[in-house]
Image (cartoon, rainbow, N blue to C red):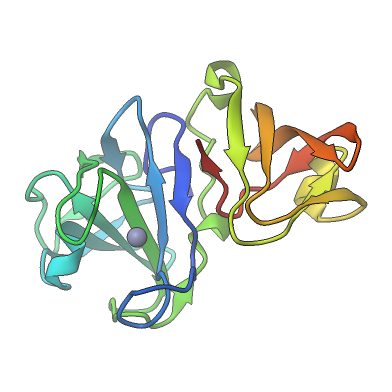
Length: 213
Ligand SMILES: [Zn+2]
């Protein structure tokens, strides 16, 4: 599936992060795009629900793709103009990234379920396994060097993008909370410069909840 953004975005809260949510963990991923707030449909589908899945989602849309995946997009800036039963097409604008509902700042919360109908915390899929966050962006050209702080998961570092994608031949690790300099992004993998005990190393990581500082 394509990205719900038209420009590069960063993940701010990973899928299944443990915390103060009703079910005890985060049911989707949160992402922020600082250059374009437009939110679009990630695939063709039909709208099932609008603003009735709970006030914590703020303005939200639930649509079901033709492949049978139910998608919830939350915290939209404005009341959606689509209604249940409306068809949406891949890339169609659904609204603007906002901070409505239980949200401390503008971001998109997107969650995926393999289901007929949306149900809270049921049939969840990891959005990062289905959405290509870079397919419709020029991330490679637009990416600027930044500090990258690893999330709560130990991150394996790989020498090549191919190794990173296939999760083979790790050349090192980034521990949770460690920082690195991110110099580029290629095919969804981040090229990092990081320090191991005494030397600088360079390698690719996939993105599991790192944040930019
Ligand atoms: Zn969220």
